[in-house]
Length: 326
Image (cartoon, rainbow, N blue to C red; front, side):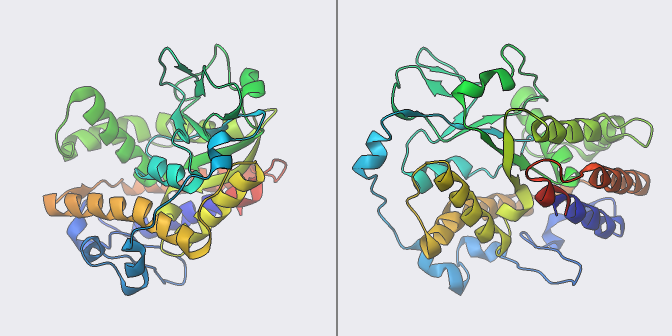
């Protein structure tokens, strides 16, 4: 499904201009072949749609004693390989509230005297986090490799992905802010230069190859199996977002992690922790008049062809292939 949706998005994108102002576009839109959409408008930031207005009521989330104590044996976290900028900004707070665990979301690269490779060195029993975010193999993890650390992680993997059309410029923007102290959006000339060098063309596209290899690395990695692909675009979709978090909570529950929210409460948790931050950021960018990075017609043709080819290579021989391919 993921790859097929991406191909459709490219067909739609082909008919758009090279640069558009964000003020002319819906902020959160679910596109499909029938032309339907589920839009949560920018105005939701101050006045949420009627259906979601009840979600702003405060709910006190108490962490139960059995959750705090955890299981007698130590419960290992799950790998969460995430292509850069694929996870929504509110993911960490969402996971903390969902599970009732204060250290639910961890980053593999963060370390201290008591924390290493997503593990608290002082924890001998109970829960030691829920997910461990990592960007391997983009930043290679070799000593030890994820496979060599199987004893310290759960068997299932959650893979966070994003449409390459938006992933590449978002990743470029993130690096510019983190490593070059860029304030505001990168200049359009800089984006075009980066795009033409790294998205490239049919004979040379290092970014697409990196994106593809990231997926294949975790799809094929033993002794793990992919339980779910977390698509960035679905987090922000009014219909698919709710379905995504329901399945996500189910996977965590099946793996033995506590789940504090169910049904409508779970949908509201998603709205408050995921949608509202997205709306606020989108509205800010809209007010700043940010352009929407785009691609040449040749680059779109190339990406469409490569996605079609990639989809044909997914043969349903690995867990999660049906969700990935169609």
